[in-house]
Image 1 (cartoon, rainbow, N blue to C red):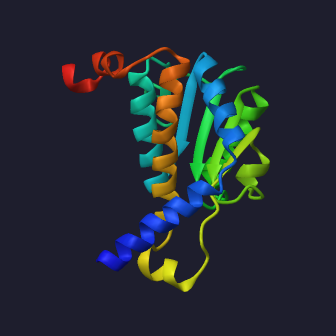
Image 2: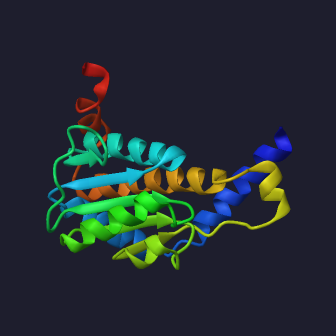
Length: 179
């Protein structure tokens, strides 16, 4: 257990270290000024997207998860974040192509900038992960991608808080515990 945990934590750290910080700054600025933000992902990647959506709502942003029955139509100037490790998930690629044609800004969080999703996106946050036997044994499938995505998105929250002049108290006021 300790060996696996150490491996996973180290690979998540390495994956995040490879990210170009200027892309993070660009994403923060786009999210902070977006009239509406839509998030999409399937499976565990979708769960990371849903967690991000919850935090962005707590920041006071207008956020929707694609596929929910109450999700409005994406329009020009809206922002769509799509999570996909491979960047080849058909529904993710189709979503990117459709909303980009409508004039939305597409931001992909993916393991491959050269994937179909990466090519269909305006901005790509690429999370390059190890491709070795240890990964298959200790962190199968998209584990490193999903954890890295979650840590990256949560690490952007303080940047958004500063940009939007928010603090923990203002987020707490929008927290679902009051429902």
